[in-house]
Length: 100
Picture 1 (tube, one colour):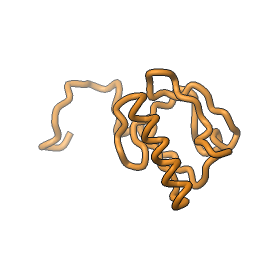
Picture 2: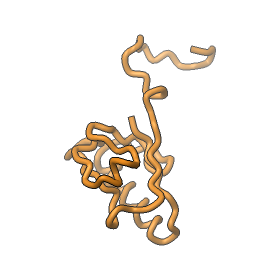
Picture 3: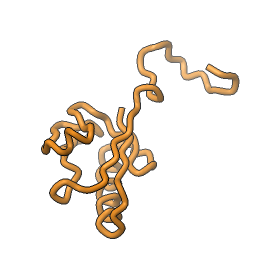
């Protein structure tokens, strides 16, 4: 990579920057984000609603950010989602997820 970029020691394989995408939810689906999360992980175990699927959610997606904030683990993800839902209910702000 360019000079000044830290060398991560990986060759090929996983390149998170390239493999990331964003899901923007302008509104909640029946009051929730419409997916289930694997216990203890940040991975999606089930997409519950067609609307969630249409927004881009897929089983096996790993959520790395909620509204621009990195989430380190399952608990961080759950509380970030809860915060995002509360903010959305108050201000109708879209909820953004970064997925890999």
